[in-house]
Length: 110
Image 1: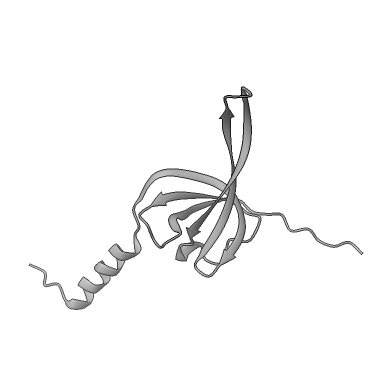
Image 2: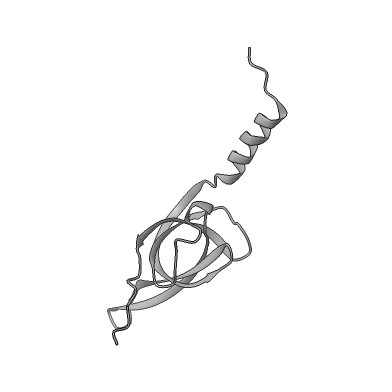
């Protein structure tokens, strides 16, 4: 029988705390703004207008938390995927899951 020490219990508790369970929908969008620990993405969605029998494009903006393993790898203009999770704050209800495409950096030619 193995005795568990306080340190091993604390390590297990911190691992559980750092894992956020994902649920609900996933979204793909472009990074518009980066703030400490979070970012804002903007994505297009298509809505049917029954009066004119046409589809129209609308934009939505969402905030998401940046996990520790992706911190510093994301920049404005990147295309990323976020997934819904439990409410993390007043405006954050999602977390970044992966980077789909990074923005190409243009070099000045002189």
